[in-house]
Amino acid sequence: MKNILITGASTGIGAETARHLSKENRIFVHFFSSKEPAESVASDIEENGGRAVLIQADLSKEAGCRSLFESVAQHTDRLDVLINNAGGLIRRQAVREYEWSLMEEVFALNTFSAMLVTSLCMPLLDKGDDPCIINLTSIGMRHGGPTATIYAASKGALDSFTRGIAKELAPAIRVNAVAPGVILTPFHDKVTAPEKMEELRQITPLQRNGEAIHVARAIKFIIENDFVNGETIDINGGLFMR
Image 1 (cartoon, rainbow, N blue to C red):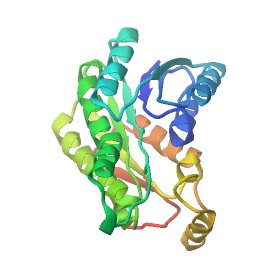
Image 2: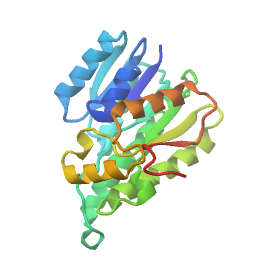
Image 3: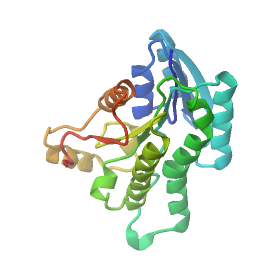
Image 4: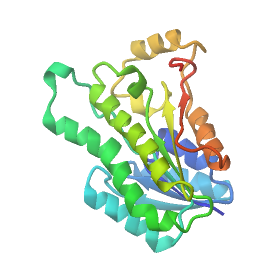
């Protein structure tokens, strides 16, 4: 049984990943405001033969990150997998209109939280079985994300953090990232118009937008392949190629 912490696991990619990894594992399901969806995910985990531990915390604040760690540490002294998935665009803003408060909010949620949670969890990861860390970045860091440049920059910083600690923590702990493209989750509901989603679908070589399960499968691959380190795997249907 692996102990797996997934931040932002109540909906979207985090929720699907929790379900996909649930069999015979203990999943720490972090959420902030979406309590009922998180409880539904926990129920699915139990039905799939896993164990679920629900933890509520506001990861945009230092106190919330520390509270999350303390809650995990109350249940286990070993963490095998840390998946830093919590994040959000929050709202679009043109470069000519940048507000300091929004920049702080976006980086706190998408970058600082992952960095601090990772740091706090090190004593637990040190005792893990083939421990690994997986950060969720974004295709936005590849394309720049017009009007979402603050978000894209925060994910670019997380990508750089991934490579840095992959070298620092090797060979004991592997660190990788997954960069989702346009994925059909609640993430886009308030920040991307339906016509824009259709435009993105049309310009994607596979002619479709992705599902959360596509990202969850990539995460499972990274966990199981112990020779993958310092890598960012793009899951975007060919919208970005390198």
